[in-house]
Length: 187
Image (tube, rainbow, N blue to C red; front, side, top):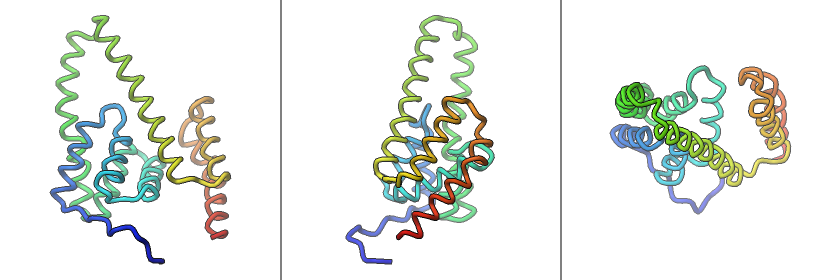
């Protein structure tokens, strides 16, 4: 590895990771991965953009919620089994309590027009956060054209054609692997 001018990245304590993931869980309504990236990469500097993208990418192809998978992997990276348990428990504990309260509220008032309008507005904001995070990651990572093409194919297949995610992953994984291999060989 070559020398860099970047200062060493901090390593979180187990408590700091627990509190950070608790905060991510509480502020990440409708777009937890966007908040997680901002906190873990930009604010805490525990991960690089590349490391976060790789972790989230692996979390996407594994069964289960991608944010949960990524939290487990990040927790394990820094604190083994204890971290793999602490990060997702913190991330989902607070929101679970809030969600139970919101579910009771929705059960009582969900048919009120103002409540419907608020929910529609929140959903639009969440979609915008996901798109904004993807654009930000693409700009910072600057993928080569072949990898960008695989990503755009995935967007079209899943987003526009509504192909189920497992089929998108299985169909495009060989092309993504080949494109990444080509990039690595060129370095």
